[in-house]
Image (cartoon, rainbow, N blue to C red; front, side):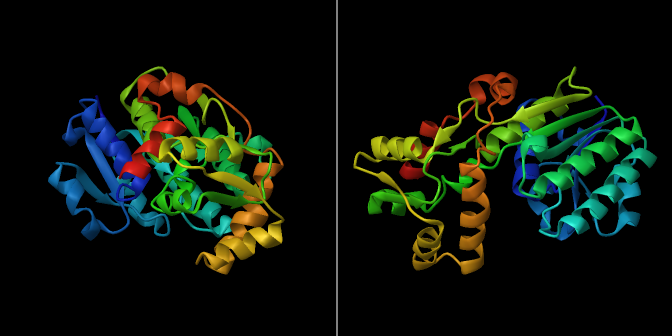
Length: 291
């Protein structure tokens, strides 16, 4: 097996992918962690991972970062400036092409053609760029992270007995970050994934009512979902300490997209790819409430 590289290796998705590769028996010496700030990669070095500098904003660093790489996991950049992200991604794709990388796995967004958030434009543009290189690809179209719902704040929500949103009927196909990292590791460590598009989402999207029912059952106390107007939802979030900008984004962008059905598309690709490793909503909620 040749060398495989993971960009954003000190980030959560990249770091989890590396750990799944190791658990699958991939030798640490065959894994390259590409990072913007090598001084933050001490934990990966301790695992025996080779660390290389690769900064999306400094294209000159990417040629050496990708040298001799057979498989590349290209984790999309985190910038909220979508035009900037496209420029960054173009630098990565061009460098991978010039380095003659053998296979690119790219982490995009699920059901991109059906989304209207604006984020999909970055990912579709990047997919098209990768196709122009002629390099075999796997598009890992990731659903939104379930951690948006299941996080350290879930205990407080369970204690309050109420989940307040402005999405009364819309469904969500969220998956855990760990499951998506496991999917990426499965592709990198396996064969037969060339030129495939994988929609990595929950196989059975769920509503906030259904989510509240799971939280209630696991917590052993009533937890209800209360759907309100967008204005009241923003007030509820800011009253709970959420910054106004984030509250507005969640309500007017995310909740609206949920209610419009943009997160309701289902696929069994993730479940088929990682099998028993798949984390159900109940499992995730149980872990969060018992942490």
